[in-house]
Length: 333
Image (tube, rainbow, N blue to C red; front, side, top):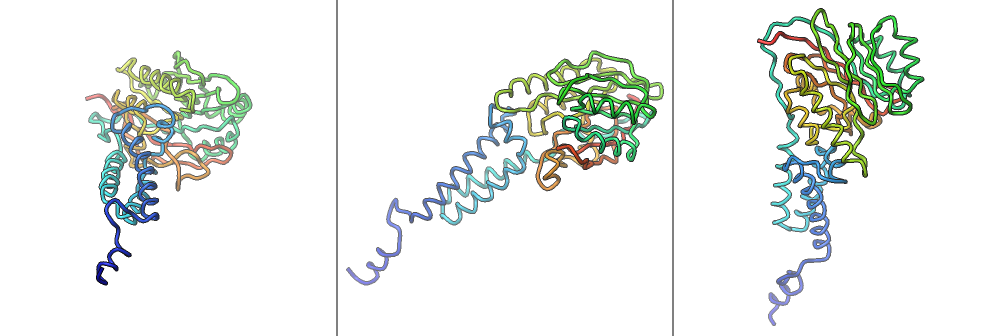
């Protein structure tokens, strides 16, 4: 054997051979891409699937991280089919990370303006911070989720003068919810659910506006079907009485990457955060937001509304950030 042949045999890969390090890199890349592809596939199929898909869908933008790591592995391993696979997955993720829903402005003339704030106070623990935020932000309507009896008592004590009208579902832990309003309220049946979701019709400067608090069960393992059903009940509520403008606000335990949430938007509702350029601003978990988190707290409005000055507020004592937005009601053309 000549010297060149000997050098080739010692240093180059033969057919079907790959150094152990490259094989390991290719396997790591394949596993990462397979996992992300499943999640992206359900997103593309407009389905929430079963555990762990709905839980991972909430963090869809963060799927870019394992995809980028997988692409690096494919390059180091010189696994070119894997590189093509990774680029394709990256393209799918980039497509679906774009904001969902319309941001069109209403065409009719403006007839009323008011401010809305929604906050999950985590079993009432964030109530003092919420009271301070309400006094600072001066909203006209406040939606409060996970308002236990102590929270309810504190709101009555501190805010009854400013907000004489209220609708509540009393309950301990996460079950209690309250709507506070400066405007007179006419009660509605709300949406029956595991956790309180009260409803009302507000008289806003002579204009009827439906208010519905949202707080479906989270998509924990073992209760994904319940989560889907309660989001479906909110969708059904959004479709009732279409002639009356609607504000549907609260902790939806869902992001725009969940099909069950998008079906609510498909009734014609728009997310105030989307209308005002604050979409995908994380509201949970508060401890790591805004660096890491998802937007699951929303103020959804019917097409008669414009939104501006949407802000995401940090409140101590709760794992959720609050959402506050200024809404303008327009006449239907």
